[in-house]
Image (cartoon, rainbow, N blue to C red):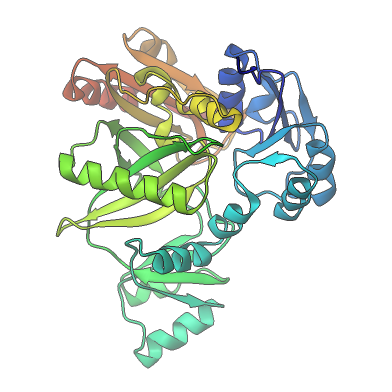
Length: 384
């Protein structure tokens, strides 16, 4: 009879909301989880008794934290990869593997990888600075429209700039960048794939996303997607193939576009639980957080079946509000049925900061969407 692995110590680098929800899932399974992040203001501190204060970008801090873990994982990509490589050489299990992180944390390397492996990705050019981009535009070798993405550091909509006119050139981002063709997007969607240590794989149903026009953050997503079923199958197969090619262990969230001609393009990936999978807590047989832990421990992945229609609304800090967070409309939302509130516990709000999310389920997608709009119009995060 196989022995269990409940006694393995799992260390999570990053104490944000994803780390918090990983700890909540792990607690239910009796797992030994620890978290490291800078201080006790991070959301995971409130649910993790084994919280270490440290800098996840520091070689020394990551090495010290990792020495007390059997398995290391991440909830954000901005970590010290050199330390993870050293820990892996020492025999620690590190997932995602540092070699995969080297690719994923650099959008230029991501694009080169997709192109070399034959995955559908928009045409691109790599630039060292915004001056090089300006020069190519002036010389006529780079034509608008295009999208500029910083190769590193960008997340939650930061580090992305769309250039359609000369006026947009003024706001070019400084730094090494990927410049890619602007796709004529019909729909944006994502697939989350789990891959275990032994190679078992499972994909969640495709989710469709709508973005906030100013913040470039996912404001609203619903599942199942409304894209044609043949395209959903194609998208799931692409995500599975990409996870295999990257030799992922854990979760891989693959963001994609469907253009106006019906072609699928891979946009970006995240090697961890993802905003596009929050709804799985209430809507699926197994949440993305439990699935990630199962994959790390090489447990059976189980079912990704969606049990009910679902919509997820990101709870963002209101424009013009900076300071101690207050939640307007909270009582009204809590009185609604099949509305599941997740407040991350961040004390300070600022415009467009992710402060929580709300999952809405229903007997039909139309019902869930209608309730989601009511939630959006009622619940606001303001400052006191």
